[in-house]
Length: 305
Ligand SMILES: *Cc1c(COP(=O)(O)O)cnc(C)c1O
Image (cartoon, rainbow, N blue to C red; front, side, top):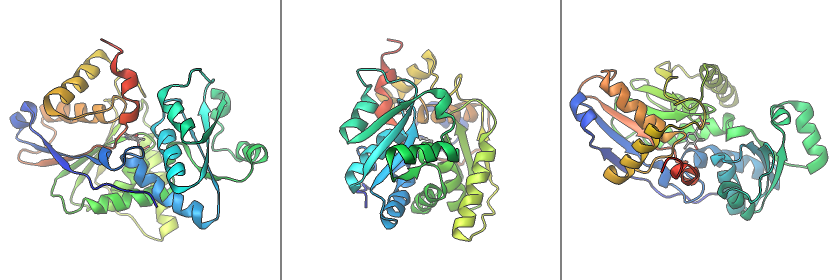
C-alpha cells in the first residue's frame, strides 16, 4: 500500500571501533521512503491495511509538536488515501513548526490539547469523547506502537536476516520497534536498545507489546537476548547537549552519515562509548539500525552555532 525503497548498508570506519577491533555496519533504513521514513514505515504498514480492511476512512493518532510519528502518519494517510487527524500535545504555536506544517499540508487536521488532557490519550472515556466530537476513525496509539506495528517490525527484522552480525543496536522510544526486532531476530544475536527517554519503564512496555503481539498472532516469543541501555538519553527525551550536536555534525561531515539528535545520534554515541569500555567482544560485528527521524533534525541544527 505504501511505496518502499530498498535501503543500503553503510560501514562506519571509526578509530574507536578499529581500536576495539569491532566492525560496525549501519542499515540505512532512513532512506526507505522520503516522508514515511525508517521504523515509522514498518510500524504503519499493517495499521493502514487494517484500517482499509475495516473500511475506515480516517486515521487518528497522537504526538508532540515535533513528532516523527505525526509527520509519517500524515504522509502515509495522504499516500494511501485516508483522511487524518493529529491530536497534538500542548498549545498551538503559530506559525506552525516545519513538522506540523508538513502534516497540515498533507491534509492532517490538527487538534491541540493541554498536556493534562493529552495524558488521557489511551483512556476509554477520552477516546469516546474524541469519537463523539470527530466521528469514526481508526486509532493508532502514540508513537504508533501496537501489535500490528510489532508485526511490521518483525517483518523488517526478517528482511535483514541475511546480514551477518553479532549485536544489533537500535533506538527505543515507545519500544514497539525493539519488540518487533526481538520477535523477528534469531536468538543467537544480542539486541541492544538505547532508550531515548529518562526512566526505567521501557522493559515493561516492550514485554507488554510482545505479549500483545503473541496473543494476536498465536505465537510464543522465547528470545531473551535483549537489553536496554538507560544512560545515553543526554538529559531526557529530546534533550541535547553541545557535545551531542558536535558529534552529529562530525558524523555528517566526516562519514557522510546523517543522524537525528533524538534517537539515532544517541544510539551511535552509545555504541562508541560501549566500544570504548570493552562492552563488545573483539572481532565482532555490530549492526546499527538507522531508524530515520531526520525530518526534525533541522530544528536543532542551529541551537549551538
Ligand atoms: C519513533 C522513532 C523511534 C522510536 O521507535 P519506538 O518504536 O517508539 O521505540 C526511534 N527512532 C526514530 C528515528 C524514530 O522516529
